[in-house]
Length: 327
Ligand SMILES: Nc1ncnc2c1ncn2[C@@H]1O[C@H](COP(=O)(O)OP(=O)(O)OP(=O)(O)O)[C@@H](O)[C@H]1O
Ligand SMILES: C[C@@](O)(CCO)CC(=O)[O-]
Ligand SMILES: [Mg+2]
Image (cartoon, rainbow, N blue to C red; front, side, top):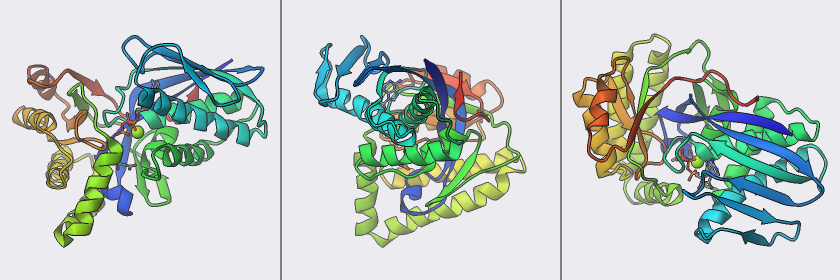
């Protein structure tokens, strides 16, 4: 039995634009998904109690037929199984053990579908735990690569390498197409996260931006301008100039909003943080609902968000310089 964990992330800059080859800077946060893998005779048993309020257990064997034993939406079951199923397939491939059976338990403190990269953390931790259980130790960058293949497959080809690379490596990273790097020397960033309790449909939101980009040259220019913000932002990042980083986050949020991926609750959390003198605030991830990230080393944005209608949860999330690890 092996347990591995991997962190979620926020985007300091660059979500959506990263899908079209612009750079992005996601940062790992100290919120993790833990996956325990135990080798069994055959098939795959998944326990994922976070997936629904009451939790559910999915059991299925090598024939691929699923037998969810609790009444939850089939699409949710399929999505949940998809990530674990593909991660286990990657582990079997890496260990050259196509028949290996697994019992997989998933537990995490990252809200699902809210822009904090729970899917990437799940996949990265699952590949690490399952390969180790088979006696194989992959490098973090091999895990990142295999995890990207999983997200790409499960999300119908709509995935960048950003979430999975960030979760595998930890810290602040820079992703531009296939070029993925860790940004060294960045140990701390004062993130405050507001969560509206909702979720966005990543596929639909990405498709919406793609359509706008095809329809209007100025929408394509907006995506390119997000790339310019990222290039400006990465040069500021090492200086610790939170004032300018915040200004660029605000600008990035405005452009994401123009591209139609913000929402009333995300906007109101962004404004609550700004009114409380956060250096800057923006939505994180695909948008539509979920989380915003503000930059604030004081408790002011945290307190303001607690009293903001539509904000269900607010927490500080330190930059996590650790990526995937065995527990
Ligand atoms: N703790 C968990 N247990 C089981 N399944 C999980 C868990 N965490 C994530 N998942 C799977 O990942 C899916 C959410 O992934 P999705 O990409 O939609 O959102 P996200 O990764 O949280 O946010 P984003 O990709 O916008 O950063 C869930 O529906 C579920 O299938
Ligand atoms: C919207 C997006 O840029 C980030 C989702 O966390 C999609 C992706 O990069 O895969
Ligand atoms: Mg995801």
